[in-house]
Image (cartoon, rainbow, N blue to C red; front, side, top):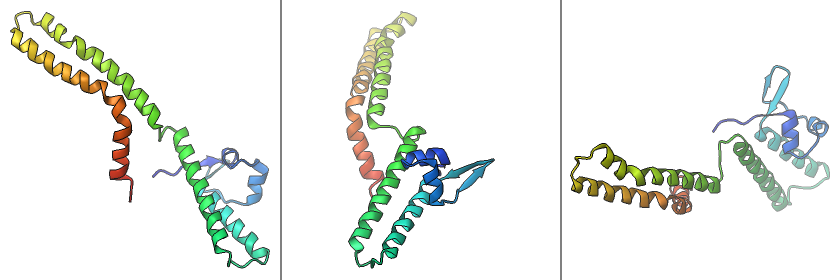
Length: 169
């Protein structure tokens, strides 16, 4: 997976803090491009987890309260995952299923329109063609048009099947 880097201003904005507060966290940039410092979500999450652990230790708390610590770590990881997904969505690397359904439905409608006129277009270009050939073309075109019209309805099922086959460990 490609590494997503944000500059200080955008990373601070995504963490819902000001640039000054972000500076105080003391996070080391992952990369520098000219004068601009770039950060990744993993570095920010790591810094925040370490900060929470040090707070627990500084307050004399034992890490006997393991459940609280685990909950904080899970929350921090969930926030990091959410931010990575948001970043991927903003760069167009990830799209919503609803958009894919919409786009494919539009494309299927355009294809169906072209396919509908195909038998007539072929008949006009080849007027000497036997009727049985024309009828066979119409049957196959109608099958293709019918299948194309079902695409939008099948997207959720296809997506679910894909997730089951490829993304579940």
